[in-house]
Image (cartoon, rainbow over all chains, first blue to last red):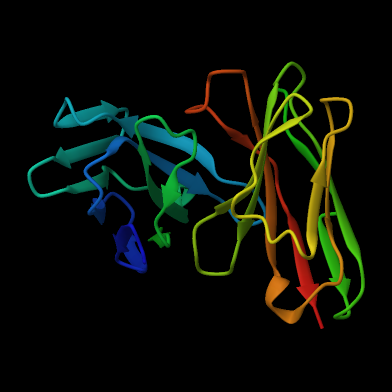
Amino acid sequence: QQQVKQSPQSLIVQKGGISIINCAYENTAFDYFPWYQQFPGKGPALLIAIRPDVSEKKEGRFTISFNKSAKQFSLHIMDSQPGDSATYFCAARPGGSYIPTFGRGTSLIVHP
Amino acid sequence: EAEVAQSPRYKITEKSQAVAFWCDPISGHATLYWYRQILGQGPELLVQFQDESVVDDSQLPKDRFSAERLKGVDSTLKIQPAELGDSAMYLCASSLEGRYNEQFFGPGTRLTVL
């Protein structure tokens, strides 16, 4: 059973455009929602994270939008750059647990 | 910048053979994690150590997988015998004690079982 559903599987964006990746969850015990960025040949790296008590968190060009009632959250990459080309994973972690459950990942390609 | 080290980076083996992966966490990180990442999917936890003790190995296939962290520093993950379905990326991560939200991942070992 996939606890965190991520879409799209792949995304192609032109330089300067907005990249949007969506995730949905069912488990209401989740209370921490990180996003990871993974480049080829590298392990995932924490990009940005949010807790359900806020609806939006912004760090530079990266923004998480969180909709608690819909049990959905999304990553927005503004002014996308070729260097943003990577695989992005959303994740969710229940309170009292140390380990996040990952989505299947989105392969983002930003064309110059 | 301190990084999690893993070796080998790539491993090709035949089924029924034994394989071992090594991980050296960031210095001072008491918590160490082994994940398996199947192609096209997100990482899934196999085992978590706090110092030399196993905290969670509920997802570790114990009939063929074993993990140890004898001195509470570096760690070894072993598979014996390897099966075709074990082909995946094996990732090691570490974090400071209590800082579970800040896991630092190594580059991984890509295992191919023929």
